[in-house]
Amino acid sequence: MIIYLLCFALFLIGLYGLITKRDLIKIILASGIMGYAVNLMIVLFGYRRGAVYPILEKGKEAAIMVDPLPQALVLTSIVIELGTTAMLVALAIRLFNKYKTFDITKIRRLRG
Amino acid sequence: MTLPIFIIIPLATAFLISLVGRKKDFWGPLLAVAATVAVFVLSLITFFQLGTGIRVYEMGGWKMPFGIALVLDAFGAFMLVIVSLIALTSLLFSFRYIAHLGPDWKYYALFMILVSGMNGVLITGDLFNLFVFTEIAFFAAFPLVAYGGRAHEFEAAFKYTVMASVSSSLILLAIAVVYSATSTLTMAHISVAMAGVRPGLKIWIGALFLAGYGLKAAIIPFHAWLPDAHSSAPAPISAMLSGVLIKALGIYALVRIFFNVLGAPQLFLQAFLVMGAVSLLLGVFLAVGQWDLKRLLAYHSISQVGYILLGIGLNTSLGMAGAVFHLLNHALFKSLLFYNAGAIEMGLGTRDLRKMGNITRLMPITAHSSMVASLAISGIPPFNGFFSKLLIIIAAVNAHQPVYALVAVVGSLLTLSSFMKVQRYGIRGENPVERLQSRPGWGMQAAMIILAVLCILTSLLIVPGIKESVLDPVVAAVMNKTGYAAAVLGGRQ
Image (cartoon, rainbow over all chains, first blue to last red; front, side, top):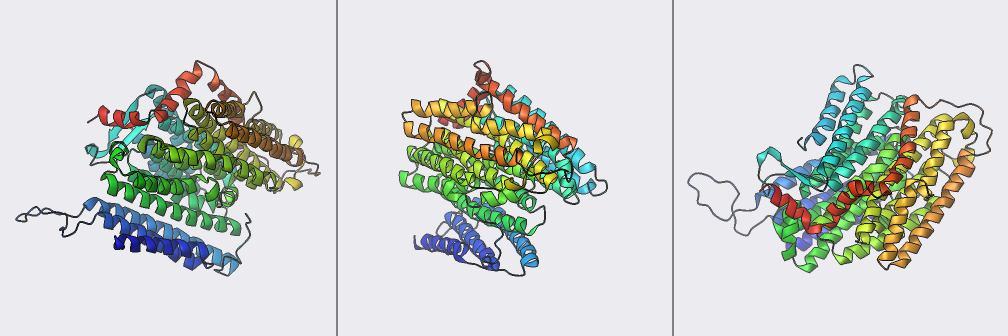
């Protein structure tokens, strides 16, 4: 149980950073941390205690295996994370070119 | 006709455009329009062929719990028609509008990826696949928001991307919890397996999905990103985002998951009602104070999504019919209003209502179609907005929720007042504007005329006879909660 809670704590750390940080790069890192926490959680859900890797081989006894599907899902989600991060970094570079700063309190042309 | 065609056509077109589009300018628009017309015709045919039926396609021949299934029912087909209709008018509007922003083959390629992402969301029957297509649509939406290349557009796109990454994380977490509870990702199987899940876990799953897709649909506590993103994008993209993206990725996904997969738990229907009512009122309050035309329209999107959510939360056939009807209507008139704003911005070089003037004489089609759209969104009788709001209000009274009916009426009055402001200060403003910077092209005018005519024609959907063949199958598909799983599993197993 403790391992799931630690994983959820990691997710909350990411969310905290995303909400409170004022620096574009730190925001990008926080969103990355959030993504990691979710991916870790998915792999944990597929974990079985004492299980083996999910590949059937000749001469190997069929034993309890870890669930292979979450691992496949995580691969997809890592690729999506990568795309999002690349997009955020590209936008941060363009914003830096325009404003010469990464501080979002100084990047404020839009108002709610 | 097989289902993947709705994803293949736009996706193949996107890559074809990036191959041939950079050589000659006309290939981008030509291919994009051809593909969108094809998808529109196919979706219209499919919608009427389908009726109350359901169509299942197993990708690669893998049987259902193992492979990914595509599922199309009346609700999905109805949304497909809306998406391709708005995409078509948006493309018509784009020819002239995008030409002054820069090399345009990238725009058309991204646009087609946006359409294929939305179509994928609408026809998928797999929870993780739904997530992946949501991401595809959003990946195309980020650069399109920043397409103009001005500082505030990058700022809006950054906010938008951060918002999307948070909501994707929440949705992914929800999918992980669902998988660990039911050991399957096919929606129909989850729907069956959900009966054995602990109630406490169900609330967690629902809350995570509500937060994730609520962020994408910009329901009120999660709305802060929408006014920036939707007002900074180029006008045809604003129309796509406000008109269909928040519905296909937000409302559609919410309805599909909460009604057909989770079986409409009472707690979350209450949450829909409260959040819908709050979005409806707060959105319109925030809109009245705006002087930037596109920002005002963006706040109205929040408010109108509130109406749809209110109709859904009532959990009656009439309320759902109102919600589905309003979904179509809002796509029509909100896109039209964004086209008007784009045409005015191109002609006058401003979006500030206080600096506009003389539009009725210089741009008669824009002025008249914006009048039609303003009346439709405020709910004035001959136009479509009146009938869908009326359905929602009657449904609220019938369901013994008079407070929500009152909220809907007050929201409608405030909408009227804010659009009187648009007409009075903006379209019929007193600034002595003598010349236009650039005239709206024929494509822009055609897009506005088509949508203005449809704003009146879709009122006919309320007529008995027509309502039975168009709206009722859609409502039946949503309200028959366990029927979805039964039809999907019974059809081909």
